[in-house]
Image 1 (spheres, rainbow, N blue to C red):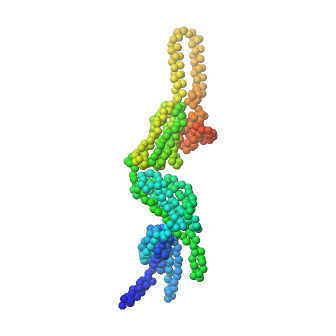
Image 2 (spheres, rainbow, N blue to C red):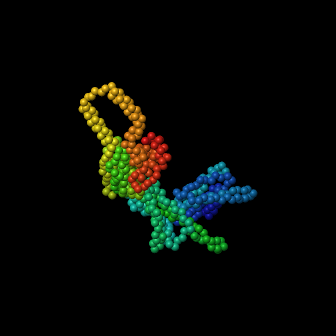
Image 3 (tube, one colour):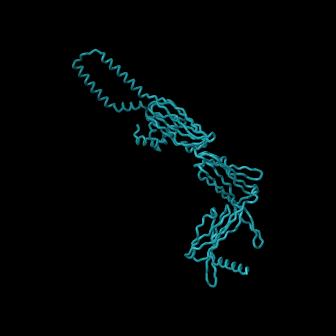
Length: 474
């Protein structure tokens, strides 16, 4: 009786499977970590809507394919579709039923189970991928090194390879080294070092890196012949977790810094530029340092963009004024993760003397005029006859006419005392106020190089003339 019941049950199961319109299967059902699995859907029907499957078992689908076949049963023609999806599962899982629309109706497949087992003989793998970190506990913005190591056995050959880097969500990538390759007794080793820093507090993770390797293999045909094949296998690195702590209130920089300020001169003429170079060196999140440009009364201040090269930050700032001024101190406040203290480094104030030659000349002229007036009052009064008075009147008129005629030349001479724009330093001082203009900035850069270095670069006179006219500079 029990035997009959079992047979009926199996027959019923067979009929259900035979008439099912969507059947799911996996090949193979048990794999080692890194091996590829094919998930297939066999669909029976005339008009189907293919399901959009991009991930299976929390892994991306690597490739898809499809086949169509026709079958005639008792004169009736039916279509069968085979949809295949290749992926690499990273853990054992169950693929839930997939819904497919067939001839206007929604049908569901059966669920399938995949078992993923650890790689056997891990010490003798042909390929090894590994992630290492110099720190596991750190603060927001604190830089550290992440090392990616790939090992290939000396006797292992790869026909082709595809590398998928780890996801670095929540981290700044500050620098990436060039690959370093060396050999040990068994492996050819390649290392890449990433300098990164966490962006936020909390538990952050770096996902596995992946390396897909195509190796040569073989299989035996049904006739017993040896057939060469290509077999793909994926190698995974380990994951990394980090405990990231917040910085103290009011502090955005973390690391260890030193700062210094250098000026090209401390004594200038009126409206001449003082060029200051700020340098910050050390370890830390340089990308969070903002412009040092200060706000100053009666002083025009022009800053250039911050430049970061490795472990050094540089910013250039120009100051222009017609009177003595003091460049203020520049400071950085940061958290030192080694001592767990908030520290501050700063530069010293820099006094700049401005020589104003025009004011001194005016003072000398006024003094001479005062003496002349004093001497005139000291002269005794004289009596003049009519002829003398007429002569003096005519002479005064002639002098007035001459002054009117030569007034433009006198004004030009007066301007020249303040400095001709043909002089590079005077031209530089006048152009600095319009440095936001890209064309002006280019000419300013050329003038600075010509004045403060050995470079002798010719200025485009046509462009310069247009700019002088545009900004009414004379």
